[in-house]
Structure formats: structure tokens, C-alpha cells
Image 1 (tube, protein in one colour):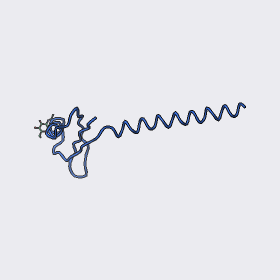
Image 2: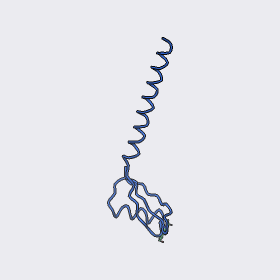
Image 3: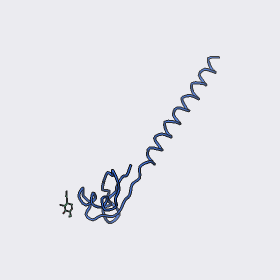
Image 4: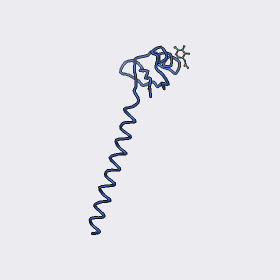
Length: 76
Ligand SMILES: *[C@@H]1O[C@H](CO)[C@@H](O)[C@H](O)[C@H]1NC(C)=O
């Protein structure tokens, strides 16, 4: 009996973990990153690039690319 209860909790925990993972995963895919080479990439140039593309409520960040810096616009 005790073993059955334990197994039930284990399944419940597993299900809860699965749901939590699915939520984290979907929240990651909900926002999109639009990236483009922007030289030089800084807060000003990157912001202008995202604004030019009419992205709404975006967040900008620069990442080093292979040859040039990349500006990304994260759109929620
Ligand atoms: C970003 O780069 C541009 C072009 O070089 C420059 O005019 C501007 O002052 C820079 N802005 C910042 C915050 O570094």
C-alpha cells in the first residue's frame, strides 16, 4: 500500500516536472530574436536597426559574430 502511494507521488511529481518544462519551453519559443549584422553594434545602432524594422516592444543586444558583431532584436 505504502509502495503504491509512493509510486503515485512519483508519477505526480514527474507530471508536474513535465508541465513545468513545457511551460518553460513554450515561454522560450514565444519570443523571437531577429538578428542581423550591424557594424558597429552598440546600444544606439542596434536600437535603430530594430526600430527601422518596425519591431514592437523589442529588447536589443549585441553578440559577437564570426566576422562582424550581430545585433539582435528580441520581440516578445
Ligand atoms: C554607436 O556607434 C555609432 C557609430 O560608430 C556612434 O556614432 C555612436 O556614438 C555609438 N554609440 C554608443 C552609445 O557608443
